[in-house]
Structures are given as C-alpha cells and as structure tokens.
Amino acid sequence: MSVIILAVFAAVMILLLVGLTRALKSPSTGFARSFAVVAMVLLPSVWLLAMLVYADSEMKKVSFCTSCHEMKPYGESLHVDDDESLSASHYQNNRVDKTKACYVCHTEPGLLGYMDAKLRGLHDVRVHYFGKAPEELELVAPYDNAVCLKCHGEAKSFLEGGGHQYPDTLIDALKAGEMSCLDCHDLAHHLED
Image 1 (tube, rainbow, N blue to C red):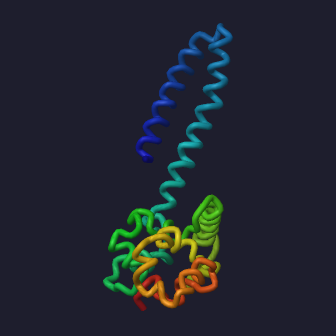
Image 2 (tube, rainbow, N blue to C red):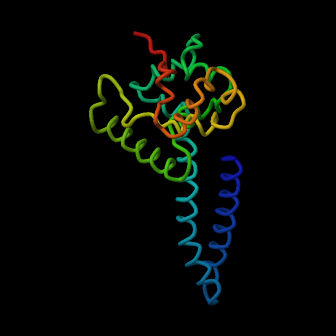
Image 3 (cartoon, helix red, strand yellow):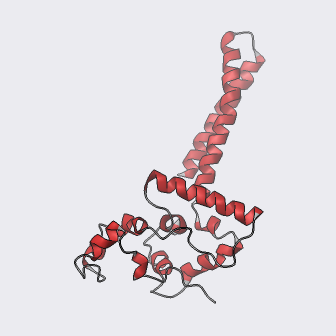
C-alpha cells in the first residue's frame, strides 16, 4: 500500500515540477502565474502529507517498536518457544500481522484508539530520546479487553472453546470489562531474566 502511495506522490510531484518550470519560463499569462503559486503551495503540502502517511505506516511496525533498547526484550519474546505467552503464540501462529503485531495488540479499536496509540507512541519516543526510560516497563493503564475482543469477540474458537463458555457469565463479564482477559492469560510476554 505504501508503495502505491509513494508512486502517486512521485507522479504528482513530477507533474507539478514540470508544470512549474513551464509556468516560470513564460510567466506572462495569468494562468502561468496562478499555476506557479498553486504549485509552490501544493509541492510542500503533498510532500508533507506523503511523509506523514509514510511515518504513520512505519511507526506501526514491530521493527520500529523494537528499535529502542528498552523494547528489545519484548520483540525477542515474540520468538520464544512458549505456548503460554500470548505474544509468542499470536505472533508465531499468524494470529496477528507479523509486521504490525505490537500495534495490533496494544491499540484499542476505533479512531480514539488510533489517536491514543499515536500520542502514547510520541510520549515513548520523547522519553527515550529526551528523558530516562524506567528500569521496568509497565502498562500505562489496565489492558483493555476491547483489544482482545476486536479479534476474538465473535470468533467461534473463543465463544465455544478454551473454557470461555464456563461459567455462562464469563464472556459477558469479559465484554463488560468486569474481568480482564489477563486474569487468566497472565503471561503476555515471556521475558528472559
């Protein structure tokens, strides 16, 4: 997807540059002057938009998340041979997009979840470069079941298997947020000591 966006961006930039050079060679017409002004506004705007789209797509990647030394153990935990580890079992069994596993499992659904993830990510980058990262990382807020339920909530394997149907009220309690998925699945990341 990002390749298509970059190709469209390059085509628009080339067309604007060609039109701008032609307009500047013969600035006598009103159209040429208008085109030059519009192109000078559009070129930086299109470039900025393309860079924002590119940055957004890059910041969703596991490679971005684990580029900070404090996050490396969490990236390594994706490859640990441990079926009890949620991150490893989801990653290794292709239950999540492997390139965006961190983003998928740590972003609440919807626009507000996206915005919250971006703001938290910017905060983490600021702390990494301009602050001091804590020795032991913790979730900022309790893990929201909505993150799990956006994939598992209507899945047959969730509704009928894995003990989620016992007692009858368990699924309702999870959906209402009265109980956390991590009450039972407490090993999210298997971190080596």
